Structures are given as structure tokens and as C-alpha cells.
Length: 399
Ligand SMILES: *Cc1c(COP(=O)(O)O)cnc(C)c1O
Image (cartoon, rainbow, N blue to C red; front, side, top):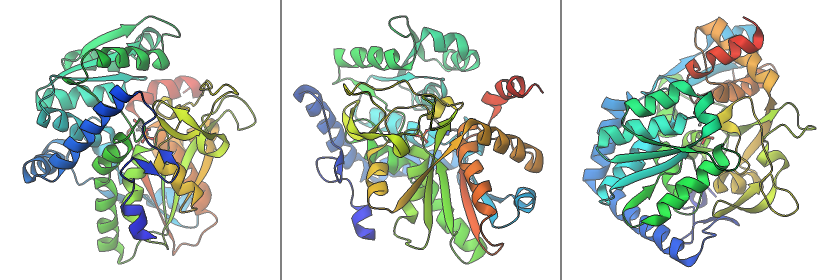
């Protein structure tokens, strides 16, 4: 079984019945071209050495694992440890795959990297990577999001990205995707569309997973060296699922390590205001691939909601869908209120302000810890820092 996980996806980009390339033939040909180039480039020492060097000297890898002693004592039960992706340059795990994508675009001789962004986190990480690698970057963003996310908009401009405001339709992420995609289709041979998670058509779920898997490779070795054993549980939040695949991949063959992905239950699973794709979704196609989806009877994506804007996506990475079906990874959902409690608890017991996305995984770990013994260990992927969320939380809680 372990080997089977590591060899995924198959040559058509399927993880079991999920993934693939649900695309018109012209676009499938472009994606196949990216796959061939990626498989070639990844085997070269030049590419791997450059990426390894940037992880070390630009991102600041390896990120440490921190034992959250006061938080664990407060909860009682298992020890909670944090893989500190929040300490990366630009403040989250996203830089790991943005660097990989920007470098690949450069090696392929592309002239421009394109993407959409919702809250601006993907846009800032990609703009940083493109500035570093020396390639043009164009970010499409809904006009409503531009008004809401001022600090990230400013950062993208400072970093030299071309920001394209999207004023059609809902003027949010959904239309930004369409807008960026239309621009991409003008010249897919010279442009590179950088997808921001383990989603989209093959080869993106594979490539983004590969770039993020550094997180789990480090974490497994670090934990073993420190504790002479593996953690009992590894947990991560799931939006599209890149930080979770990043930390899970290296642990997949370790049958004794329980893996848990945590989704946003928002205002409750019995309300329309959530983004619990794995828990409540059904199989269908979205954005060029097959996965669990929150969709209406006509197969149109439903509006989704989470207090953490990085988690509100109506689809999810195809490998997660497969891992759920075969029972290797368990998926749980955590509400906005539980997320806020965890956000404040970590801030006040450890002096670490987590991203609201990461606080979902932490909230689950805090609940689970109480049910386990002090000899057991939970490793949480702390995917990002909460600077971006501080004002919102303070206002929301009336601090
Ligand atoms: C974007 C983001 C996420 C969600 O993306 P995944 O692909 O599910 O990892 C999680 N945490 C942080 C800090 C983010 O910025």
C-alpha cells in the first residue's frame, strides 16, 4: 500500500477516480507539455540544487518543530508540537510551491507567470518568487477583494507584479479565475499559469505536492531525531490541500501515524456557511479536474464560506479525495468559533499568532489532545502566521 501512495498519480493524472484533465484538447496538450517539461527539469541537478539553495537561504528552511508546552499543559493529554511554516519568508507555506513554479517557468523559458488571488496570499507569495527568479508576474484580483485586502495589494505592487482588477460578475475570486485564465489562453506557449494549491488539472496536483513535500520530509526526520519515535497524529488544515499534502506525503507509508485533514465548518455544517468539501461534498468536476465538490444539482459550484479566506474553496485536491476513500487520511471539520478559540489560545499561551487557516488544524489538535495520554504526540502543521488576520480578529472579538 505504501508504495502505491508514492507512485500516484497515474500517467493520466488520476489518484484513483479523482484528478485527471477535464479540459478541451488544446488545453490538455498545453498541460501535457508542462508535465513533460516538469518531469525532465525535476531530474536535473541544476533545478534541484537551485530549489534546495533557495529553500535554505531565501525561505529559511528547515523550519523548526516547536513543542507547545503551555498550550499542551492547558489542554491536558497529548503533547502538541508545531511545524513552524509560519516562520518562512512571506509568512506561510505557499512560498514553497511558488518558488518551484516560478523556477519551472524560468527553466521552460516562459515570459510571464499568471495567477488569480482571493485574499492576496497566493499573489504575494508568487510575486515574491517571481521578483527573486526574475520573471514577469501578473495577478488578477476581484475589485471587491482589492478593496478588502489593502496590505496585500500594496505588497504585490511593491514587488513589481502587474495587478489586474477584475470588475465583472461577482468581482471576487471566481471571476478573477476566469479573467486570469482568459489572459493565459492568449498565449499558453509563453505564459505559465501558477495554480496556488494541489488542485487544477494534471500535473498541478502532483507538482504542487512535490514542491510542498519538503515540509513532511523535514518534519519526519526532525521528530525522529528529537523524540526517537514518530508522532501519533499529524494534522493540517485543508483548503485546496497543499500544506496538508506537504506534511502528509512523507508519513503516508507510516501506517501507525494517524493523518487528519481539517476543513472549515464555518458557521456550522447545518448552515450554508461552510466550506467542508470533504465532509459534505459529492464527486464532480471543477476547474479542470475531478474531486469532491460543493455544488448544486446542475453541477455549478456553491458559494462557500469560512472565517479563514484561504480555506473557502468549493473543491479540494484530488489526492485528498482518494486518501479519504481508501481510509488513509481522516477529515474533520472545525467551526469559526473553535478556530477563534485556538487562535487566541496559541497567541496567549505561546506568544505565536497563527493564521486563521492554521488555527483550524490547531483547534482540532486541542480537542483531540484531551482524549489522548501525555505519552502521545500530535504534530500540527502551522501553515502560516496571523499578522494578516490580527486586525480582523481584534475587531471581531472587540479587543
Ligand atoms: C492559502 C493558505 C492555506 C490553504 O491552502 P492549502 O492549499 O489548503 O494549504 C492554509 N494556510 C495558510 C496560512 C494559507 O495562506
